[in-house]
View 1: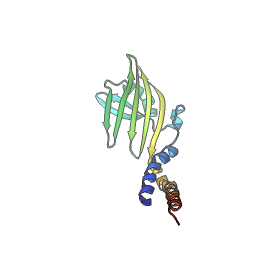
View 2 (view 1 turned 120 degrees about the vertical axis):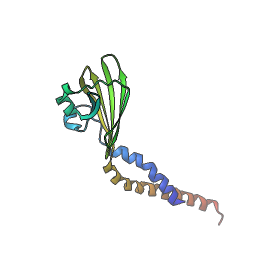
View 3 (view 1 turned 60 degrees about the vertical axis):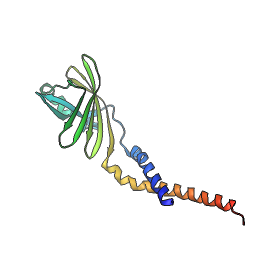
View 4 (view 1 turned 120 degrees about the horizontal axis):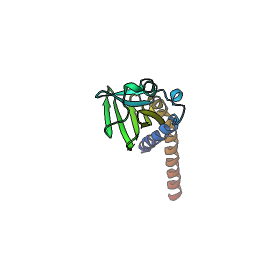
Length: 159
């Protein structure tokens, strides 16, 4: 029973550890702090995944204003690109990158100009190394629960 409670608590602590070990969101200085900021460009009838740096350098070669609400790009990894809002002149686009880490790049396209809004690494493989640390608070908490239950039982039983 104690093992079961420890396992339940262990899995409950994993999202907390993931949240605590995730890098902070980037909202400025994108070229230095978010080198893996990806955007979706269209050249002819082909979509391509580009870093922000490459998109700015090759701006004339690509179109960044998307003609559909959602694009799934399968380039060995599957990436999901979604238009969050659109007007005649502007689109806000979210690019979800999935590989050994998961990241979300959000940017605005006006005409064919890209303006980065935010970049967030959602999780990365390095966080897995912190997961065993979750067993410590899980084991301590389950030990406290079982010690408390044992004391309550001992008080209720007549001598």
